[in-house]
Every structure is written in C-alpha cells, then in structure tokens.
Length: 221
Image 1: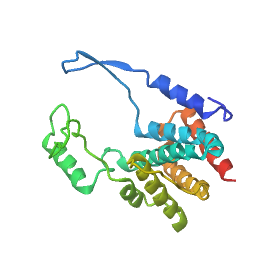
Image 2 (image 1 turned 120 degrees about the vertical axis):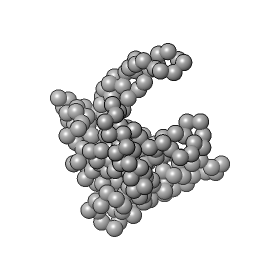
Image 3 (image 1 turned 45 degrees about the vertical axis):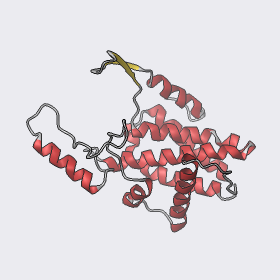
Image 4 (image 1 turned 90 degrees about the vertical axis):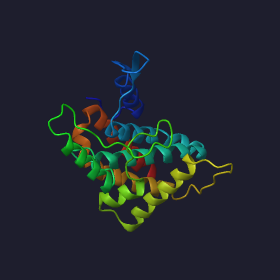
C-alpha cells in the first residue's frame, strides 16, 4: 500500500498507467480501435487529487484557482453520479429515462443482452448518449447532511464552473476570499459521498483521495 505521505501525482501516474490504452476489436470500418477506460468513481478520485495538487500553484498565482474549481466540481459531480447510479446503474438518470430502461429490460427478457432505450432524437453526430441529471438536481437527490452555508457554497462552486466551462469573450473576475471555504464545503460533501463507494476503490486510490482531502483541510487552515 502506498504511504500517506506520497503526493497525489503518484496516484495520477498510477491511474494513467492503469488507463494504458487497451486494444479491443472494433466492429466499425477502423478494424482495430484503442480505448481508454475509467469509471465515475475513478474519475472522481483522480479529479480530486488533481484539484488538490493545484492548491500550491493557486497560492502563488490566483489564476490557477480556475483549475482547482473545475477539477473539484468534476470530482463532486462524478462522486454524485457514482453514488446515485445504484446497483442497476440508472439512478442518476431522470425518472422518465429510468422507466424507459426498466421497460426496455422487461421487453428483452430471455435475450442474450438486455436492451437499452433508444434516444428519441440525435441533435449532433455524437449526441446518442443518455444524459444524467444536471449537477444541481443530483445535489438535491443526494440528501447529504450539510449546513445551509455548505449547500450555498456548493451552488456557488457550480456557478463558477459553469462560467469557466462556457467561456465568453470577457474577463472572469472573482474574489479569492471565500474560495477556501467553498472548497472545504465541497470536500465535506465529497467525503460523505466517498463513504458509499470507497470500497470500490483500490487501496492506493483511497490513500491518495484521503491525502487530497487533507491537503484541502490544511489549505483552509
């Protein structure tokens, strides 16, 4: 097992090694294809570690808070998806889509592979995926025991992430004061979610996640 003193970069390197491109037959015209694989739980852990590793750079250059915010938001979102998906893997979808999955499975009983509902409309070439609930709706479903201030901080984190990911031709300005508390609230929520999926992480992954949470706690103080 990796010791608690190892930096999150070691976990990131381990994850990159684990994600070494795997060759698998492709049934399209390409003949062979290479795929990178990662689960929502692993992406949550990896994003949290990367966000924690940016804290020192953010202290030296506040512009690096951009990366802390985006990665921490992704970590929390992936953790919510991992927890809400449930054993059937559909709990993070809205009620209508969950019902469609159940109906498709019932109709395909006895077949080698369960069917999935077909998306009603393809807007773009690659827009054929089933989409999970938005961040705020998943937050409401998770029912975590957080204070009103902590919930407000997480809503603020989501608003900042939206502005950063949906770039406009303008300068983004945000006071640094209060960002530590916002991150602490997000980490508190992450830690509560982690209780539900930590057993699915490898020992090395869990050690590094705990080290990342400690970095945020130390930075806050």
